[in-house]
Image (cartoon, rainbow over all chains, first blue to last red; front, side, top):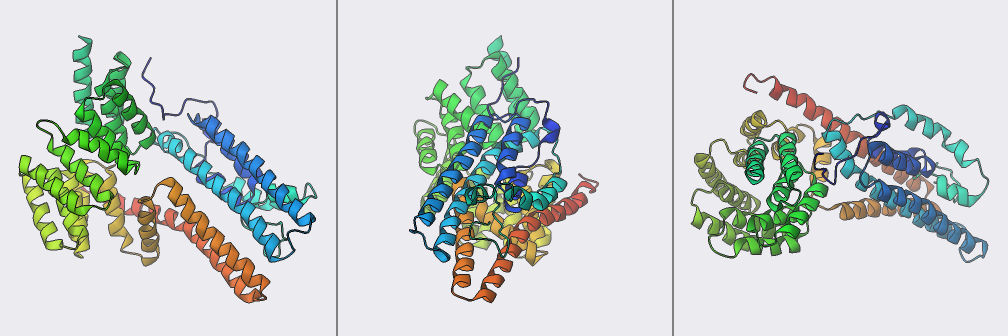
Length: 168
Length: 310
């Protein structure tokens, strides 16, 4: 048995589905968190990343953290402590900043393994069609549940120009 | 018998590392560690190889394993310092450099590494002193001359940098680091053709040489101001660790979004819309520029590959 270097990915049967970590990062901009974070988690498993537990935990923390922050913003808004207009938009921006920051962090962690994976000639899939479909589907996904918390959690980082206060 | 086998494997790994064959070198060091997983020097050798291959996570783990097994070996401290310097943990890196420098008959490489760390810490004067100490041990030490030349270049003394790098190339006309430094100095002096010659030479020896590829990209970046701007931004960001990079990007994102929201709420809808379009344009540029830049580099590297001497 050969000595295993700690940063090397392990063999998996899902290797043909591995994408660059920059693709789920782009997905949070174009599609939304509903796609980006599960995609990061899947990519970690498909790549056989030695840090996959950490990456999956970060994805779970991203969902939980966003839900908690979103719930606080909505509670403050409903209690009248957060006036409509700029204050609520800036508060939602705080939640979005958390989402983007944790997504960058997951991407940075996954990139370390990806470089080793690519270095050893691992196959990398081009997911442009999936990204395009995600962009077209994002309205449908956001509209699945008529609740601002859902919108805050699943929406992406690029808002529509006439987006509602929650809409990013 | 096993010890001798490990020594031979590590010697072969070092030869492959110097040739730029990181995969071959890694496999040889792995074979040595398969024979003895508690061999400190084998862990250190693997750390040095992984560092050369820019695998910082693996290099860090191997360097720590080597130190845990033998904390008295100055070579291991040198490797640990190099890994920590690459991780931008400069305080710890310097502590290991001090151990590598202290004691009888220190290696000039320890002083060169120490100078690198001190330079990163912003103490160029001390870095210069350390390099002169290395040159006092070995007057024609290529590593020390090359780093001193880079220091002179950073201080704006281009002629002195050129003189020093000429000495380094005289001492070893095939040293890749000296050629890359010579190319960098030539580029700073506006001689892109000569810089390209140096980069071509190194890429001819090792097509994956990181520093030569960086020099090559810097030469190509001068051919397009739009992509050149991205390259300069990228190189500036590369000097920062992941946390700082993320913090900078997030700060830029938040400032842009606040400006959009505030201008909109104040009734300047047109300004807000312009800011929004500019922000989207910047996002698109930051995604497209690296791809276009990589394509430009790949095309230009074809000319190196087609070179009959390659």
